[in-house]
Image (cartoon, rainbow, N blue to C red):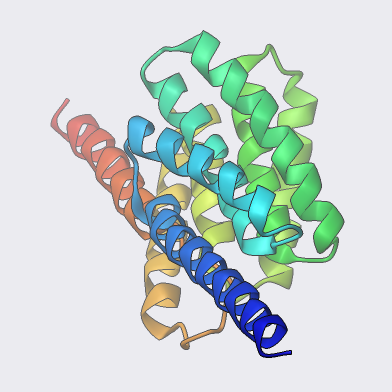
Amino acid sequence: MRTLLLFFIWISSSFLSAQTFYEKIMEMNIANADTSNDRPTLDLSAKAMERVSRGVSNNWDVAFHSALCYVRITDISLIKKDTVGAKIALVIAATNLKKVDTMRPADPECKILMFYHKINEFRLAKTDPKAIDLLETQLESFKKINALNPRIRIVNAYFYRCFYFSNKAKRKKALDLLQEATKLFETEKPGEFKTKWGKKWMNELSTELNLKRNSAKTK
C-alpha cells in the first residue's frame, strides 16, 4: 500500500514538474512573440511553442502566439524581400489561425491577427483593388466594434502603410491611428486583453511613417 502511495506521489510530482516546465517555456516564448521583431527569435519561439502544444493540448495562448510568430515572420520576410520565406510562413500562419479560431470563434484578438495575415496575403499576390477596398471597410467596421483595442488600430495603420504609402492623406490617417493606439496602450487596464503584442511594432511603424512625412516636407 505504501509503495502504491509513493508511486502516485511520484507520478503527481512528475506531472506538476512537467506542467511547470511547459508553463515556463510558454511564458518565455509568449514574451518573445509579444515583443520581438527579430525573425530568428520569432522562428525559434514558434517552433518551441509547437513542441509545447504536444504536451499542453488545446491551449489558446500557445496556439495564438504560435500563429502570431508566423504572421510576424511573414511580414519581416517581406521587408527583407524574402518571398519564399514569406510564403512558407504565410501557409503555417494560416494553419495555426484556423486552430485558434476553432478554439474561440468569437475572439476579437484572433480576428485582428487574421486581418494582419490577410494584408500579408494581399502583399504576396496581385490583388484586385476592390478586394483592398473591401478590406478597408471591414477594418473600419471592426475598429468601431472594438473601440478600446489598440491592436486593430495598428493593423489598420499597417494596411495604409502597405497599400497607400504614397498617399499623403492615407499616411496621415495611419499616423492618427497609431497615436490612438498609443493612448489606448497607456490607459489599458491590467488583464483587459488576453494578449499584449503590438507596442514595438507600433513604434516602428510610427518611425517609418514620420520619416516619410518629414522627407516629403523637405522636397
